[in-house]
Each structure stands twice: as C-alpha cells, then as structure tokens.
Length: 213
Image (cartoon, rainbow, N blue to C red; front, side):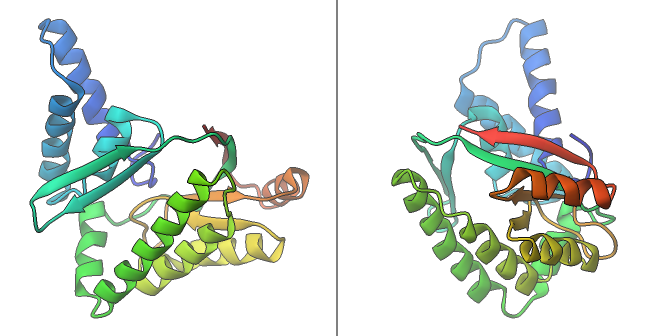
C-alpha cells in the first residue's frame, strides 16, 4: 500500500499500529472496539471518515456497510461470497489531494446528493449480483461514470479507463480519487487476461493481480 493510492492505507496503518500496541500492553479488545479506534484515527486525519475503510481492514471479507447518519450509527453485514472475483490493480498515479480535500470537493458539488443516490442504487445491484453468484462486471463501469460525474476523477485516470473499456474491459478508481494529477489505483477486470497484460506492458503501467473471495 502507498499513500494517496485509494487503497485505504491510512486505515490499514492505524489498524496495524493499534494491534501492535494492544499486543505490547496485553490488552484484549473486540473487533468492534478496534473498529472504533481506527475510525477515530481516520476522523483525526481526514476530518470525517465514512467508516468504510476501517470496517474493511478490521473485519475483512466482503461486506455491506452503511453509515446511517439519521441514527448516528453504522450498519454492517458480512456478505457470503461464493465467487472468486479476479481483478488487476493499475496505477493511474498518486493523487496530489488528500481524502479530506476530495470530500470537501464532493460537498461543493451541487449535484452530489443526486449522484450519490444513484451510486447507492448501483451498490445494491452489486450486492444482488454477488448474492446470485453471477457478478456483473459492467457495474464497475456504471460506478466509474458516476464517480466522474461527482468530479473526483482526473484526466489521466479517465483516459486510462476509456482505453481499457475500448479493449473490452471494465475499470474504476478505488478510493477518494484525485483531479490535479493521478487518481490512485484503478480496479480493472478484463475477460481476456492476455489482452490486458499486453496493454499494461505497452504502456509501462504498474499493476498487481488480486482476487476477492
């Protein structure tokens, strides 16, 4: 992991530090208590954390996670995943902006509430797709379009995504994004691994193969 890459490095780092401290002082805490500690660390760094990254690093697996602002509570459910989802991470470049900067940018977008509501609909389609054991990779592209509408994707990342889609693949940014330069790592899937591998090689791109199961 690296800073400003869109992979939740700040939450992962905070989690690792807390685990080391708990082990050193022989303190036992539940995962829920550790989640709260990581969340507070994220709030300190970013201003206000959605809670998504702390939940991902502490609980692991595939989760449905919701920040219920009205109830001032988090709703989390572990999702059973019978699929092995194959992806490639491709680096679009480190973002110059912080996560806090991007959150402020989203808040200033007059259309943000409407767009985020549409993203919620796509998320529900993701959940249904996994539950039915038939993951629809086209939902990745749907999510990417909405992230672009939200204004958090830079031109370099947009160009990469367009080229990958032109080859028959699917791609989206993984985190808060960035617009001045890079937008962090892209989550990419292509039905033809060799075709994508050639594209990565021809463009001298940094990449990592990952799977979610």
